[in-house]
Image (cartoon, rainbow, N blue to C red):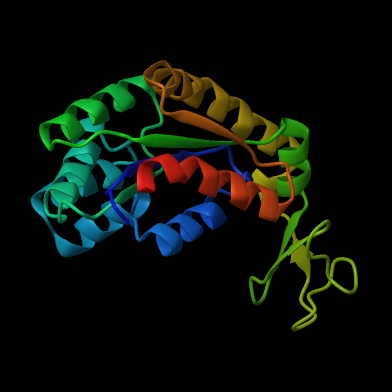
Length: 221
């Protein structure tokens, strides 16, 4: 890889972001910076920022943006100049995007490409509300993509399948509405910079993968 790009991946729940993130890490050697993982690691290691984050988490509060930015800055600052980055789960608001841009600029980096995986809400509701889980072994199923051999019964141990409260159709619709309200300004932020690439995540898997790779070519060659 000739350059060390900073890539941001975003998309609503059920868009397949996790699968595509794994591909980007493997194919382009990017360092995956997922906000949740950064927080858990910092808390477990007892770093100063981890201790501060834990204080908010223990109180049931959101970890402030400056703490998250600090965690990202510490990790990015320690990376070699030729190490590419994949940001996942941050920024979620326009204010966070602005703060991230400013922090990266101080490290002589910038967000080179933003991969926005878009899927129609009706498709996402069908994907997410079709998820069922075994009560005993926690094996996941999906009525469309991975149905059990016997409806309502786990293939592995015969356990009862249940649906989590946040996987019901109404709950999924609410989650998607929240995502759109929060992240639409983030997409607009990067569209104004000319770095946003919208990918149709409702297409067949190989087509989505090819679109992701095509978007990566300008920043990796």
